[in-house]
Length: 97
Length: 261
Image (cartoon, rainbow over all chains, first blue to last red; front, side):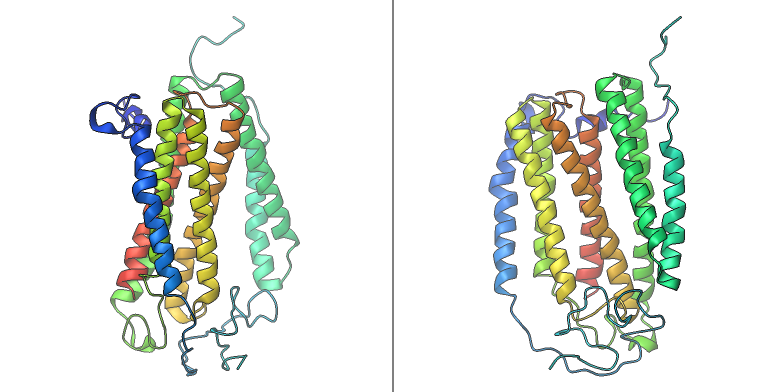
């Protein structure tokens, strides 16, 4: 017969009880609250502290950027979907000062 | 002989494969009509038809399995094969985008400045929000494993709590990526860098949304007592898909965000 998928259905728990190896629900709950969520909190803090507006780069009309071979099928066809006029220049330059 | 004498599921005739095929045609032709002629009716019809097909088809699978008992052990084994093969096909889908990225970034052309990232591109700092996104998805892998074990140990309260935390983390990831998309100084039209970045991360984000939806469906089914402690394949399929989404992100993070910056 082809490959047996039965082991996949049990995942890391070779037994429903959490005895040997400690891979039951209690272990994963501990990992959640001691490792996983604190890491998310720390990384959130780190990202927040390093956010904040940087001076935007000067506009140079490079031919390999801001390509407009075909207009976008929305709006005026010249703005990308997540266009942010403060940081995204049009092919002709920044819109807002 | 009024009942079957085998353990397999002879599915009743169903209209959903046909409506699925029709909706696929509407979606593809709809995209063409939208991109080339700015006409959206076909696309909207396709989105509506495909959503309704998915809802009704999978509703029927739940009815057949949970309420009518058709999902015997060999049937479940077939469903497992199916989910594994589907995920493998998705791996190949992403492999194409990674191929495109490495093709362009390993041998940068003179047209883009002979360097990677190309001249004029300010890549995102991998140690800021992208690192947070990595922590969020890895944490969600831990919480879904907790949910699975709680489910197997018949702890209803904890498995629901862990599943909700997984959904919350998935939503947090999507929110963070959307805000990143609004803040990047480069766009999809910024040459090959923009194309590879947004196609890869964009399709990944779509898969995060799909995975979150799958997990949310599991949450509602859990509330309706569909799962037992040793028969809950819908949950396992959602968990496998979620781990796949996490692994794709790890490859994205290492290749595009870190090595490619």
